[in-house]
Amino acid sequence: MSNSEWTFQTKLLHNDSKVDKETGAVSVPIHHSSTFHQVDIEEFGKYDYSRSGNPTREALENAIAELEDGTRGFAFSSGMAAISTAFLLLSKGDHVVISEDVYGGTFRMVTEVLSRFGIDYTFVDMTDLHDVASKIKPNTKVIYMETPSNPLLKITDISGIVKLAKANNCLTFLDNTFMTPALQRPLSLGVDVVLHSATKFLAGHSDVLAGLAVVKDAELGQQIYKLQNSFGAVLGVQDAWLVLRGMKTLHVRLQQSTASARKIAEALSKQPKVEEVYYPGLTFHKGYSIQRYQADGPGAVLSFKLPDAEAVKTFVQNVKLPVFAVSLGAVESILSYPAKMSHAAMPKEEREARGITDGLLRLSVGLENAEDLIKDFEGAFAKLPLVQKFRNVKVR
Ligand SMILES: *Cc1c(COP(=O)(O)O)cnc(C)c1O
Image (cartoon, rainbow, N blue to C red):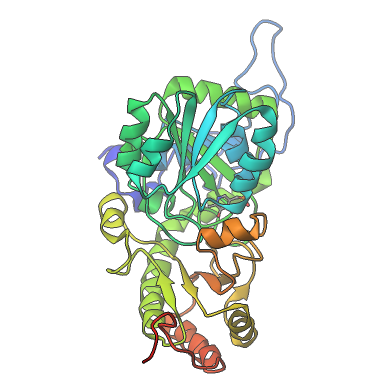
């Protein structure tokens, strides 16, 4: 059996760095060295300086490249460093078409930083191919997707966007943080650059900040390598090791958390105090069938809407199990408040227009027992006043 025939689950453990070639170590050695001795003035070895290449970081870069069905991976000091470096492929005068409910940090990068360098942007509803097609301009160079989107879990038809992009000579970038290659492999669907905040599910333990970029095309790989080395936001070796270790249990963690997320989403959709539940594993979710087609599961993140900020406050004060924090994709469940956390960088009107209201909470399901989480939530819901679930329906 060759490597390529193994399932994802097996590939997580049996990769190039399974056994160190020098020592037989079964854990990737941490090479704390900024520079590398050269034996000759003519011939330099494979490594010369750690910003340009380091064996520990490279073990992670190779691992993610293989898992994403790519040819080359790049590890950065954070997800934003990976995303920002990929955007450096653009030049003054270029235009980006981007998901309207994109991660708050990406929104800030595009609207407040790239814009100063003469790079223009248009936000679109990426779930609407007609809307996307109508916003492509002659100078559009990149279509930027995030699916499922954050925090409303909207599903983009990846193949549909790739077709549009190819017809218009644009590159496609996709933030695969919520799915990871365990559930979704965008390069196989024709996407050009896959981006990750490895801080989340890939590392998985709320103990490290890291970002990754993966490509299939060798020429594009060369360009990103040059940008990584020029901008210099590379991942340190200790952190690369932590991500590698976290990734070994990625499959089992996501399987467990996804199963629990399904149960919780179902329980929430029956809870009269919840106005709406957003989870692509619910059959009534708008993106349900596309998600089933393009991914191997709905993932472990869901959002739900309470009536207002007051209800959110009471709920958060009374819930005991989840950590109330920014971030997601960890062994512990994390409850977050997009309006004040991930999307605080977005002006209120823009935020509300995107459906990220003051009553919206996002839950990243961890490895606790699902029934324990449901019970904990029910306890907190009991503290909320009962409101009419369909508040817009007038009672005659
Ligand atoms: C967290 C996150 C990022 C940013 O990653 P950092 O590691 O925090 O820099 C980007 N995209 C998504 C979807 C995220 O959740």
